Amino acid sequence: MHISFHGAAGGVTGSCHLVDTGNTRLLVDCGLFQGSREMREENSHGFGFDPASIDFLLLTHAHLDHCGRIPLLVKEGFRGKVVCTSATKELAGLVLMDTARLQEEDAARAKRHQGRGNRYSHLPEEPLYNSLDVEAALARFAIPIPYDQPMQLTGDSKITFQDAGHILGSASVRVEAGSRRMVFSGDVGSPHHPIVRDPVPCPAADVVVMETTYGGRTHRGVTETATEFYQVIIDTGKAGGNVVIPTFALERAQEVIYSLREGLEQQRLPADLRVFLDSPMATTATEIFRKHPECFDQEALDVLKERDPFSFKGLTFTRDRMESKAINDVSRGAVILAGAGMCTGGRVLHHLERLLPRPECAVAFVGYAANGTPARSLIDGARTLKLFGQELPVRAQIHTINGFSGHGDQGTLLKWHEGSGKSALTFLVHGEPNSALALQQDLTAKGLKTQIPELHQEYEI
Image 1 (cartoon, rainbow, N blue to C red):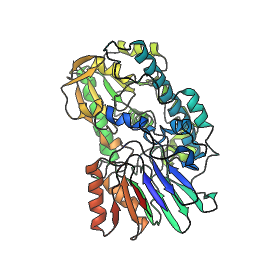
Image 2: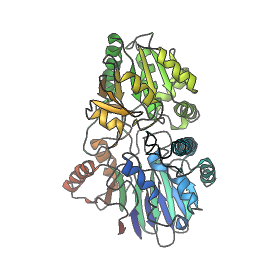
Image 3: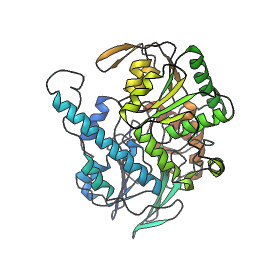
């Protein structure tokens, strides 16, 4: 039996792991590489295996760095089935269609401005895949699998999805092949966060493939995070500015809205606060959240009995461009949530263009920012940012509020891993080198066996 790593090996994005049992070839996730231009170019460099040889794709959740290359996989020959939870199936359809549309728009711009040496010169003239490719990929999705219900894939392979507590529908995957038991963590969520349940601990395993996004960090608690977040909003309002929050459309947008609703109900935020969710994708994702209360924790279910957890007076969902542009007329006292979360594109760039030069405004980052992205540049203290072909001064206040992270921190990951057992071999993936090394040191100190694989590296297990 062999396992090989074709993404999120030595970095965070592009999750893609292949298990070959000798009779069955299982792929766990097939995500896009994100971040710097060099990282994004990995998406067109081939998978490192023959897509037509894969029997099943097990999808842990719908974030782009886990599902974003599925249409490309199908385009290049995959004819197996995609297995995931019901919520993941719906969210993945939304994410992939939106990604195809953006790629088509970028390719059209690149062709229109071909050879002019302008701000679109870096864009590819052909998309990785288009909307028709996404439709073909979605046709490969099988009947969704519920949590904790074993599913026999083939004569020698059985799988079980467990709640990973990361986003709606997210799962860790237990694979039983012959006499071997493997567990793929997916992305492990933070405990005690609102909306979704806490992650289910790792079961006993011979092999564990584990994410390490925050393997060397400790998050602030939920209560402290909310206090810090509310204070940023209050201080910025008093200064006469707006807060822009670069927001991932899945989970983070809904979690921030949930937190803002709580702050208003507890009278910890100004009653006249205006909030704009300026993202068609996040708006649709919020509608999908409302359809899947089976993924909610008890606190969210209790709220749902009395009111909509994702709605409050002063909240505006903006879908079309004219509604988005109208936000420009609100010069103070507003919170603007817009994608993309790493500031690599989307409506958030237009808000940053207006607000970054204003010292009374603030930018609050509430999610992960990969190396090479504009978000990471701002977090690291850049004094200028290139947007739309011009260098903008960064005078706005920059805040990083990491307690919102949907990823478990070092302590959470170690606790999740405890159930695997002393004899398990653990592969550490989905993290920057320092994060993976920090977690490796902790596990090695406990006498556990670990490996940090490189891209396309294969192991016999």
